[in-house]
Length: 187
Image (cartoon, rainbow, N blue to C red; front, side, top):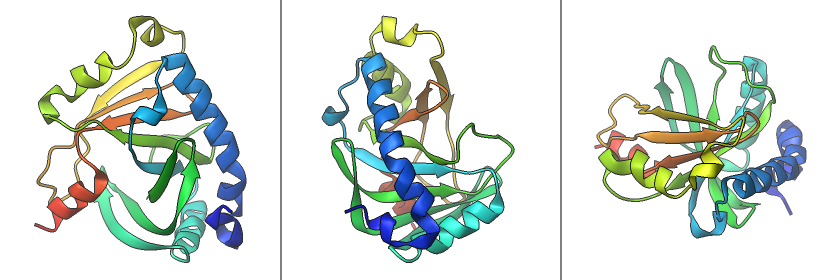
């Protein structure tokens, strides 16, 4: 059973999870990417309204421990350690990211991306991640790539990100697990 389905504040996310899984599987197929070969570090939601973020925050606090509540790029981002992992595609994911709304508006409120770790030198992350994807997949109309390096206050590990999206779902690659990044903040 989906542990979110028992929490009133998270009913919309429980109902949205099958859509996310199907969209993610289709996107992975387009990218010719075998998701089972990766460890999913965490999964993330997106919303437009602070009221939705507050409701989800209240709900996640009923089924998880707050691992981090940092301000990154000017907005609060919470990380939760779930008491019971979620089954998402080939993975059991025990960490959820809840960013509060920022300037960007997302086409859908609900599950938005999954983050995968490909361990190695942070300086070579982009090249290593791109090497996993055939050129024809990257040239598919509607596929967009974004390189970034989000950093929370006090983080000691570099955290470059390569995000690949089709506008409805995103797969992000990082060199470190989010738990390692959070641990680096604590010194």
